[in-house]
Length: 290
Image (cartoon, rainbow, N blue to C red; front, side, top):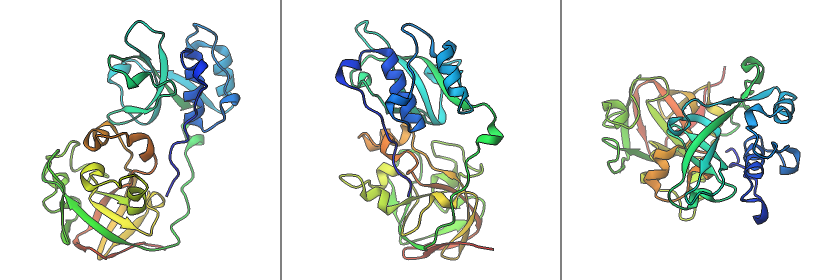
């Protein structure tokens, strides 16, 4: 299970300084101490600030401006400049997910109504091939299925099942991922099945419910993040881990409480169903080696 986002806070005297909020957001995204991040000059556009570009360039990174920030979405973190109501100075926040929501707001400017995104920046690698992360080692343990949930369509209540038929290349019988009635398109790689760790759900107070996390299968005892790019078994069903099931504004809306930031890198796994069969509560979850 990966750690949650390591947000970087500001002193109260700095919260109204745009340059300070920018530095706090960059430090949060890059997981650096605040003191390690230079601040742009007062009134400067960070994307055009040589001090910022040279510093990021030393890490093989740069800032890419977003063309239409108010409607922009990104599967990872990005920086949004937001204008609060009342004519106060703009501040910076960390956005996350597709569709994107506020993942970290060092000045709490988005706690009040009336704020709006005015511009955005993505921290991007100069050479993507050199920046691709290494895959984590395969899980050393096996896990098991603790819960099975399906929802007939987007927004409908999640219904628990003791067992369910997994359909190859499609998903769980009766679920919106199969019928094409979910929030996101069906039939694409990584759209058949979603999983989340019970340990993650229990880290919330109160624990996340199925109607909040909206994942199909709740597992216990195995790290799901390490299954990206690998085939694994859920009972007799062969699956393939495609990508992390990162949180977004949709899940935050279902929960009705601030869960987006805490679910970053901990939102579970998106997988394809390679061979069909019946998945049941208590089934073993294990990686396929060799």
